[in-house]
Amino acid sequence: MPGKRVGANVEKLAMYFLEIGKVPTWTEYQNDKYNIPIKVTSFGHVFTSWKQAVNLVRKTRPDVWIELHTTPEPEQVAKPVAPKPAPKLSVKKDPLSKLGSSKKEK
Image 1: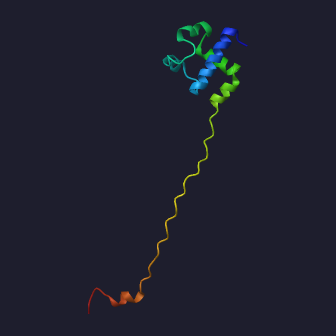
Image 2 (image 1 turned 180 degrees about the vertical axis):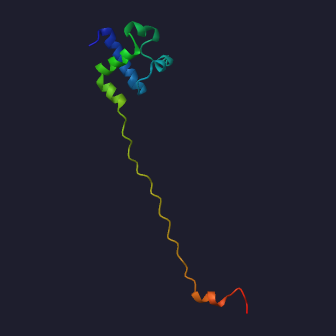
Image 3 (image 1 turned 90 degrees about the vertical axis):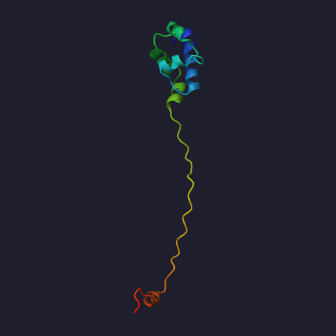
């Protein structure tokens, strides 16, 4: 178990990860200047590296880690079924009509 200072900062990082919904890279963490729980300049006083901080979150808060790395199952939404087109009614032609009309007149 980490010491008090490290443990408190691990808790802050875990809550930050939950807020943004993922474990950011070090660059993403640095670029998020206004929302980070530990200043970038103070980060080196608490942790030796970003990798160590992420591993401590994984080890001390497995519940947070599991929540971040499980993908929610997509809800099964029933697709609207388009109505089937009405069958085309075939009009039966009189077979004798072909006999009576010819293109050539005799």
